[in-house]
Image (cartoon, rainbow, N blue to C red):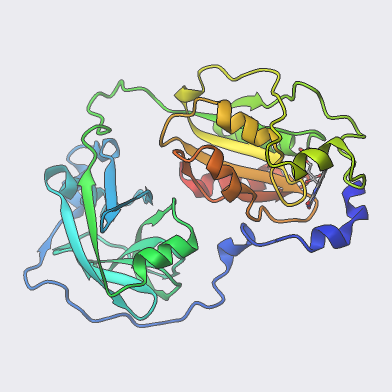
Length: 345
Ligand SMILES: Cc1cc2nc3c(=O)[nH]c(=O)nc-3n(C[C@H](O)[C@H](O)[C@H](O)COP(=O)(O)O)c2cc1C
């Protein structure tokens, strides 16, 4: 394929963001603190959660100090028990730093737990010893029960938030979003993508086939010709657009009722390590509802997703952006399906 004619150019580009997902090379096996946490332990048995299956209807809000954090909660007994607790009262956990990798504090209750040996990533929230909550700003390997992970903070933001002596974690029920009506509106997934040579389109179709998501192609008003996408020509249309911070190529057809969709899988090709400018046109004009989850994905010859997705966030700052994923050209449907499943959306 022709982009391999410029291997040195693309090899020099960042290959970090998605590959970082599994970068635990600094992880250490550390035996955590022996803080019993609280003098009076009560226990929340698993059975409490089976009396009715309505915990999915509780949206549990989390704050570290006064900062709201977006958490993707696990679907397990420990989280169900936590949701039961926040139904009746707000939980406050006074945390302190331990071992240069976590904030940890007593819950004051024991929750059902199935500890397993895991290596944590930045932003992971776990239950330690059944009765303490830990939030990580560096990796550690030990036996924990996963509770969730923070999805809306960069590594730097997590360190700024957590690498201090003490923090307070607050968990509360979201009164507005708690659904008691079983007929409440179902969320619909959308795959919105831009693709010139159809590689990103193929991934978009895999996602749609796997999730049943509606497909929406971001079609440029003026289609890109072969000359336009000639990255060897510094006067080609793509060269000029990508070098112009204000370029916003027009889109042929708007997406109707986009506010009804959540999550939005957002796909694009990497152009010189960035997202094509038409992605900014789309995000700036679409009426995406506040808090909508956006999951970026891209295809490229060799570059990683790099900072392309982080830069796109400026165009829809009120959305809940998840970490992006780069796919190789021709990635299989099972590779894509495994990634979608790992998101637990
Ligand atoms: C203008 C242009 C710039 C590109 N820049 C990069 C790049 O920086 N890194 C890379 O690995 N691939 C680059 N590519 C290759 C595309 O990212 C890759 O072919 C992608 O899969 C195309 O997606 P599409 O078929 O959906 O349009 C570039 C391609 C074009 C046309």
